[in-house]
Length: 69
Image 1 (cartoon, one colour):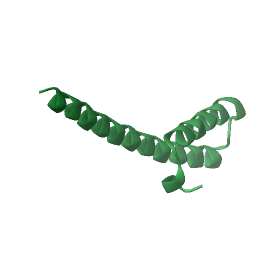
Image 2: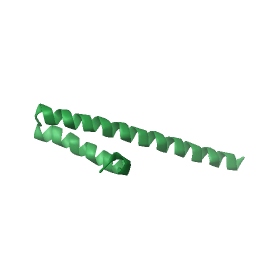
Image 3: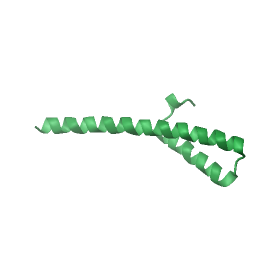
Image 4: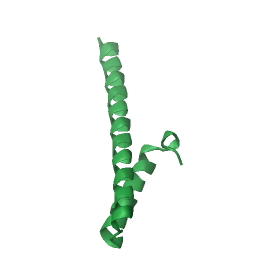
């Protein structure tokens, strides 16, 4: 699944899976490096989704405020 098809929930779920693997499976250094790299990319993706959602919600709330005036 590419990031463009990924929902926030799917990305967060994958992050949780990565953390579980690191905590419970003690991957070797090569696998650990790969997992941490993927986690960084997923974290940036989630942060972007949250930033976009925040901007959209702020705009919608501003519209409500405009309608009240």
